[in-house]
Length: 228
Image (cartoon, rainbow, N blue to C red):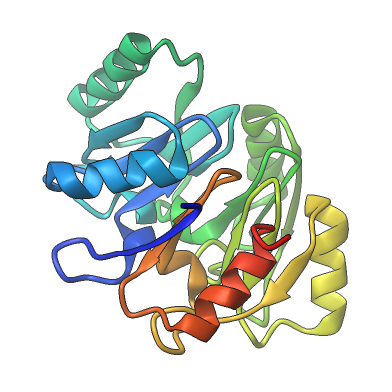
């Protein structure tokens, strides 16, 4: 299966508790093995269980792509050591970067795939350039539908993208040109427009909140490139 419904301790907001790329997924600690197995089966990448700043809302603080994951600079040293240790055990060569910024909710403020990244206009031009160097892709500053939290109102992979229904036609064309994938509008979890907070997705599959309806799933499958 390339799409499954799931909850994290009855919460449908999976994107708050993790982030996924085509090489790994960072997931909050404490999930049961059955749910971890669903994540492994659908996303088809190693699962790294961790906290960030002693918090389980890993998806709020971390963002990235197949080249690097950025986390706030005051992530605990023990957490970095644990993550890096698990990466070495899995044989994954990816950089975990404690990024220097007064902003910390990188999962909310960064939307990225392996071709480009859109970051909130709240980042300075210098910070955007630094993120470009770290992630190894073109980075643009901007908003989606008047929202700075581009990472929570959107999800993008190397196959497709889904964003907040208030995104304009001009923004959709811009996003398609930036990420080099088709991008559509849609919702999850029975009408929630903050789709990035509702799911974990990569090029292999997507795990959505358990409240997501059948019509929403069809739209998500189409947007993320899983419908033939």
